[in-house]
Structures are given as C-alpha cells and as structure tokens.
Amino acid sequence: MKNLKKVICIISIITIMMQAMGCSQIDTNAEKNSLSEVSMESASGEKQTISLPYIERHPSQDNYGRIVGKVSKLPNTENGEIEIRSADLSQIDLSDELENLLLTTYDSKTKWPDNLPEGFNPNNIMERCKDPGLGVRNLHKEGITGKNVGIAIIDQELLTKHKEFTKQLKYYSENDLIKAYSAASMHGAAVASIAVGNTCGVAPEASLYYIAENFITENYTGRVAKDINELLDLNKSLKEEEKIRVISISWGAEEEESDGYKDLKKAYQRAKEEDVFVITTSLLEDDREDIKGVNFIGMEKTKLTDPNDFSVYGKASWAEESDLYKKDYLCIPMDNRCVAAPTGVDDYALYQTGGLSWSVPYLAGVYALACQVKPDIDYKEFWKIALDTAVANNKLDMIINPQEIIEKLKEQK
Image 1 (cartoon, helix red, strand yellow):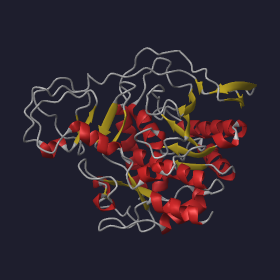
Image 2 (cartoon, helix red, strand yellow; image 1 turned 180 degrees about the vertical axis):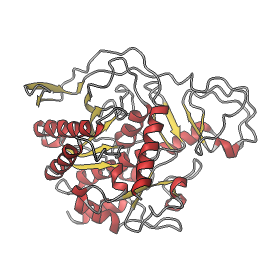
Image 3 (cartoon, rainbow, N blue to C red; image 1 turned 120 degrees about the horizontal axis):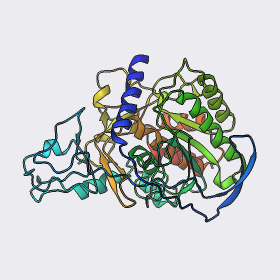
Image 4 (cartoon, one colour; image 1 turned 135 degrees about the vertical axis):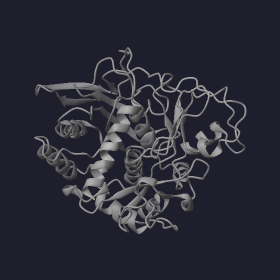
C-alpha cells in the first residue's frame, strides 16, 4: 500500500512536469484594490504591512499549440488518455472515432472538423463537465457558496487574471524557486477552478489565498512546511469573514527522510490547533498523524454522463484491482472535469484524467460550504457527517454527498 501510494504521487508529479510546459514574459502589473491591510513577517523576520488583494506578480498565459499542432490523425492513447489540447484536427474525419474521442483531453483552442460522431459535441461536453456535480449547484442556488470563508491553495504558478477565479483571489505569492519569467501552469488553474471557480467551483464565493510552489526540486517537503506557516501567519491578521479555514495541497509525496519532514509535521499540527483543515493526497493512506482516520480516494465518470447522478461514478481505472476503495474511504469526484486553462483568461480545458490532484480542491470546497453554514465546525465533525451521509452505488460504498452534509448541519442550527 505504501509503495502504491508513492507510485501514485510520483506519477502525479511526472504528469505535472509533462503538462505544465512553457515559459514566457511576465506581466508585472499588481492589483491595488485594497480589501484590507494585514501585517506579515518577511523572510528576514521583519514585520511588513500589505494590502489585500496582494498579487506578487501575474504569470503570463502559456501556449500549448506546440504540444500536438496540426495532425492528420488522432494521437495514440497514453495511460488511457489522448492529448489534443490546442491541436488542429480540422482536416481529420472523426465520424467513427467516438470511443477514442471519449478519452481525449482538449481545450478551448482545439480546432475540430465538421464531421464528428453523433452525440459528441465538444462545447456541450465542456459545459456539462464544468458542473461540480453531486447537487452542488443546488446548494449555490440556496446561497451556500462558501461566502465569508477562505480557501488556501499551495500549487504551481497561477494565471491570476483568469475570469474563473480572479475576483476570488485575495493573496498570491511565489516561492523563491519559481522563476520570474515562468508562465502559468495547467495544474494551478485547474485546482483553483475546482475549489472556487465561478462556473467550475464547489465554493465559488470563497476567498482564495494562493502560494505558488516548486514541487520538483529537492527539499520540497520543508518548503511546503514554510508555505503552510506563511498562510497561518497571514491568517492571524485576517478579519473573521476572511479567515482561511482549509488549505488544499494536491501533493503528498513527503520526503520522510528529509530535513524538512519534522517541520512539515509541525506545520500540520499547528494548522490543526488553529482550526485549519489541511488536505493533501497523503490522506490516501493513514499516514497523517495530525488527522488520523480522515481518508479519501478519487472516483471517475465518463464525459457523457450527468455529474449529478450518483450511479455513474466508479473506481479509477488505475486503482480497480487495488484495496484502496475501503468502506471508510470517502470517494471524491476526480476525472473528466472541465476547468480553467492557462492558455488565456477565457480558456478552459477538459481533462480526461485529473487524479487525486482534482479531488483535493473539491473536498476543500465542500468543507468551505460547511464552514459557511456552521462557522464553528471542525474537521472531525465534518468528517463524521460526511461519512454518515455518504451514498453507495453498485460500484462504490462511500460517495460524498454535499447536499446531505449541508442539510445535517442546518438541522444543528
């Protein structure tokens, strides 16, 4: 089990490296509309006052046209996925390719031919897959949107001006290892969308606090500890209605033998003591000592199914033969999600596979909704209710049920 988790984390990191391509010049304009002023401690230990929203820099949009380019046939399948983001397919006859098209990862800049299979409408599918599903949009209609709750994310460079989350973004800083010329990443745009996106997000009115991190180089475990502490320090100065209640980190390959591992465990513990729920992919297994018993796994569905239909979800293809789907593991949406793309402020991408990286911000979003309804909730109470209200189908035992979680919390008011 431990080795399988490590393999999954390594695969996720390799996927990030392969997909987060390219770099270009930066936009140095900063946001100046002040939400509030907060006191922060600089790296040198000096106190400094910053105004929110605080945007350290605006990473430029990336260009994925070179990934596939103009092709005369669909690319081959790799790991159950066909990559056609920003590809030119205009000269291909795809009328008999429905099976393969249902495995594609594509974006707003993908050029399609006129002859597509019946039932495959790229734009309609993207709109369907933006829906967080499982009744979340019904909660939004009730005004349960994560308002007055803060979600923090530690991930890769963010396209800060994307329309999906730019208004929610209150704080954006970058680790020193992020290059000043690096472009926005696909991973950052995706996780921000799933957590707080206007159309894709579980908690579209939650405030977003974001630190861009480099997970590829050595001693990233120690740096993540530093990032968590930076967010907790920031939280001390935030107004009650701005407070961070959950930190989403789509990563979990902690270097247990590294110098920074002790610091990371201390950061996790500090967050727990300060009522901030830190969600990482380490929760795939019970190796987070700070929150024992909080475990989840991702689940998948196809492009053509209704994300609000609990019966369409199943086990991830890479985990079907494993023992990861245990009765006390909460199943969270994962694959075939349409989210913001880093290629333009109006662009979107539909990813055939997202992995646990996409489940983490989803869970963070549901927790933010719970915090809106019951501000004094903690992760223990949330997790018990989430397990008690989970839904089963003929493939999975414990599917998260956001609407029922909220209904249970309403009953306690």
